[in-house]
Length: 97
Image (cartoon, rainbow, N blue to C red; front, side):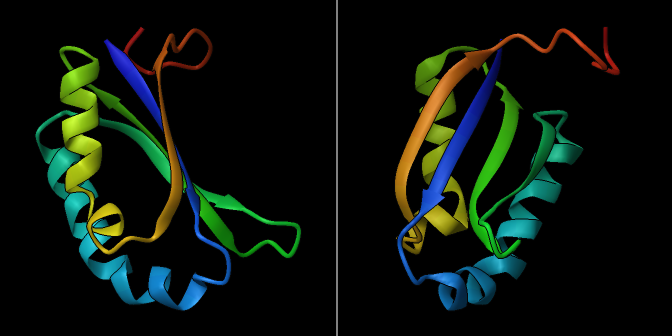
């Protein structure tokens, strides 16, 4: 099952995001190597600067998706104000379909 992790940063936290970015990128690269990561990228504000993340992963169930989300270096650093996890059905332009 695919899960979309929609993570919104705390206000005025761009500096924290940039400081934690190298660890976050390595985390995502590891997930990609394991075949878990399907797509990822920053959510942008009106000024086109990052204000959150959208990450789509494969996981066995919601509990596994939640556990994975909690291991993200951004989450560990306390960057996120909110994290919403939803089952996701990738219908269009899914390269694995």
